[in-house]
Each structure stands twice: as structure tokens, then as C-alpha cells.
Image (cartoon, rainbow, N blue to C red; front, side, top):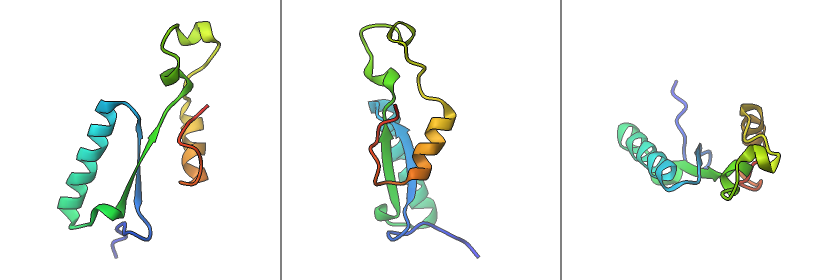
Length: 88
């Protein structure tokens, strides 16, 4: 039995918020839609930013940050779609 996403339980596609990453996420969604005959509403693209994405005028080390760890990303995804799309 297949468990495909649907509008009531969309597949969340997490991506960084850059133009390139968003374009790649949309391409992935479009290919999944075509391959499985699913509507756009069966997917949710969730852009995320990290502290490192927001600091552009100096190195992250100088700012005292550590970037985005995989553990933080996993915690963010477990929290669900109602949380802020930032990881800090």
C-alpha cells in the first residue's frame, strides 16, 4: 500500500530561502507531481534561514555564531509548519 501525500497531509519540502535553493525545491516538487499525478496542494515548500544566512557583513565566526547544525534542522522539522521558518 502506497502512502502518497495529499492536500490534507502534504509532503513538506525543506529548503534554504535563496533563489537557487527555492528554484530547486520547486523543480523537485514539479517532478514529484508529474511522476505521481499529484496536485500542487499535496506539497508544501518550507523555506528556512539560518543565522549564517542573515549575517552578510562579517564572518559567522566573528559574529559568534555556529550556523545551522543538522540537529537544529531536525528539531525544526519535528515542530511542524506552525513555527517560524527561521533556525537560530
